[in-house]
Length: 139
View 1 (spheres, rainbow, N blue to C red):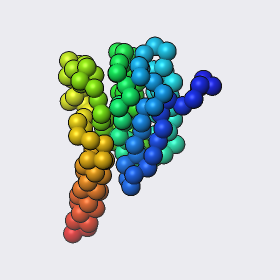
View 2: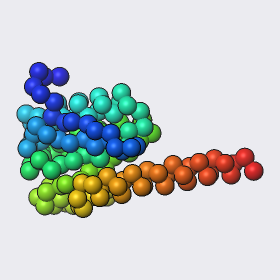
View 3: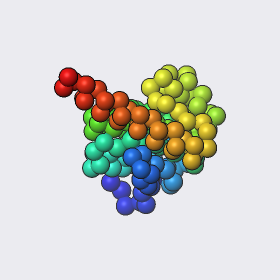
């Protein structure tokens, strides 16, 4: 990894981890590998991460960034977690729709606090359903 400041900051909010892309307005050839390595490294060292990637400061992303998002999502799923995105610009939303990434990732278009609240609720419901299913296996 380079000696540049981290591109992403992580904050835990209950069982959801907010990953804010702080130091890159463009996820392009210059930053995309560091971005992917930082986030995958975090996810792999924190099993069961439910990651909400905050794109508030990102205006552009290259096709290589889309590949990194798939890699990050795969790392989340492999660690028994999940990934969603929020605060995506209109231009990036168009890219997600054209590439069908809007089908792969849930995109929250409400404000950050509401996105965190909705994702937390979804995680809680999933956990409750799994507990209920496991309880009923014993009958």
